[in-house]
Image (cartoon, rainbow, N blue to C red):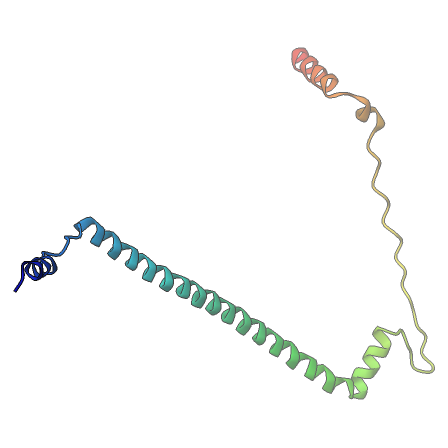
Length: 137
């Protein structure tokens, strides 16, 4: 063996460079933070979708109730009694020989306008009057 090959062997078998411990800890912390961030994003998305599903389920339930009410009203629309009721109440129709009576109530009196004398008094004037009243008592 030549001297050059011995030197090359010694260099290749030299001890590996030591990586400081803080670098290892930093890399591990970054990996853990990245994994947690990925899970947090997915968790928030699942949470949002669950809330949306609950909202939509409530909306579906209310629409089904409304649909059932409308179906019942559709059934009623084909009965003679309901048709007569709607004709009397909403259209004001009467049977032949009946007399329609319309009761008209008088309109409510308008509210009294505020006193003009009080409107002209400034806040300072009201304060002075209040002080005078207290002093006279």
